[in-house]
Length: 220
Ligand SMILES: *[C@@H]1O[C@H](CO)[C@@H](O)[C@H](O)[C@H]1NC(C)=O
Ligand SMILES: *[C@@H]1O[C@H](CO)[C@@H](O)[C@H](O)[C@H]1NC(C)=O
Image: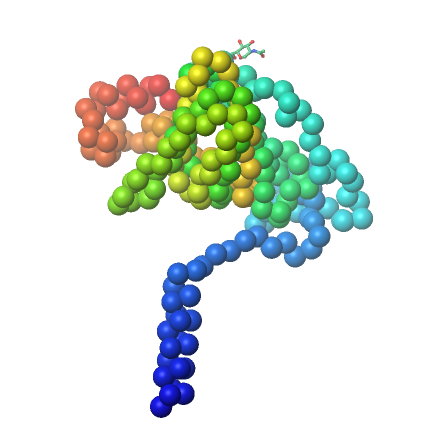
């Protein structure tokens, strides 16, 4: 009787552990898999083709130039320089990448999501108001004002943004948990799709007048 009870308790604990903890991490099947850059019309694989490891060189793991600011003379006043597997082929299968983000005074990196990665951001210059919003139904907003040396995390898939609230340029660097995290900028996807989404859909969805929708569509 006592034996059965302890087995049931153990099973219960196991079920609890399974229900409350689930996670995954990329796990390469070899030391590295330097992507081959010049295969254009190959078959599609989940990732990139690998170079023969014996032919790998230090340059496959190297990039120079992230000290240079991106050009922020655009409507949003920000510029993301992405150092992913397309730039450093040695990132293939490693599950990480890096970005530099430049912000003009009052520039914004508009609300967007990365379909394949979490992000950890470090401010090195300026002052940013940053935030992310959780999934439905709560849509809870987490925000923070960041100064140089401050770090903030944007969890996997959450819609997030950064806004330069200072009078000077701002600079941040961020690590992403994917070799190619992807970006979906909400406004561009919704109002700037190609071809455009039927304005009736957006008028209803956003509770807007159709002319406002058409105006927004003309802006993206
Ligand atoms: C970002 O900056 C680079 C380098 O100055 C520039 O080539 C690129 O067009 C800029 N992108 C945007 C969206 O402004
Ligand atoms: C930045 O981009 C703007 C708009 O495209 C362009 O006029 C300007 O020359 C660029 N500045 C630099 C430093 O490349």
